Length: 288
Image 1: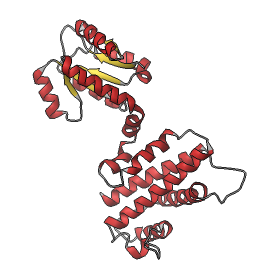
Image 2 (image 1 turned 120 degrees about the vertical axis):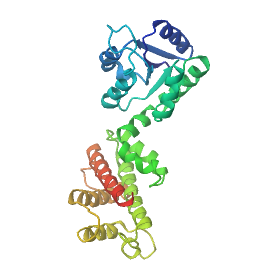
Image 3 (image 1 turned 90 degrees about the horizontal axis):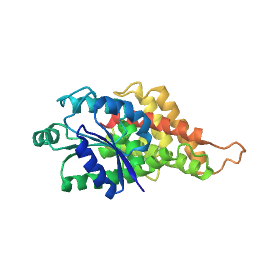
Image 4 (image 1 turned 135 degrees about the vertical axis):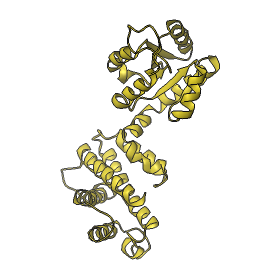
């Protein structure tokens, strides 16, 4: 299977060479020379490419005769604004520029021009392609997935959340049931973590049942009752949707006691998922 990549580099000779090398690795390189051409071309091909390769120095417009020192900063600013979920790498033959990116733009993946480093870059792009859905999801919901990156919640829930998002448009009854159940599980994990790290906000006697297990409804009731007199807020739009989502997750996800003819749909899952996202954002203010 061919992987499509966009290269932005004003050196036609080098672009041809890299394109030939990429073809040996089943990577098809689409090429534009300038920032303006990238901005014009990307909307046409963005959905079909797995990554963007940028040079450190480049031309801004087709009329330019020389590289512009501001090329990389302008390209990154544009991509962060318009295509923030699209992976990118930087490929350069400029030694000083390479050192600059390594030192001052640590989030960027940077490679040197030359067969050995280019091979590493192609390997990285292949890995990106395999996991592109996950990469896009985690970038789109970066503020949500921060709870896993900072080890606030068990990392095992990360893949479950990714799968819920991937399946968000499915009306398959089993998928809907599983998604609602996993959303409920993550809600319980959040309450468990609050009780673990901040017993002032959620003490054991208001968080646990007689068997020492997390009692979500009991915990939620305490968090709501204390929010008006404590050091934290628990706004109505979060607290009410959270408990409703939990009840739906129990009734239609974990249990199957409801025998009515009208069943949850993908919209039920979307509603529950976005409620969970609000709960996670609130949760971060309590534990971070």
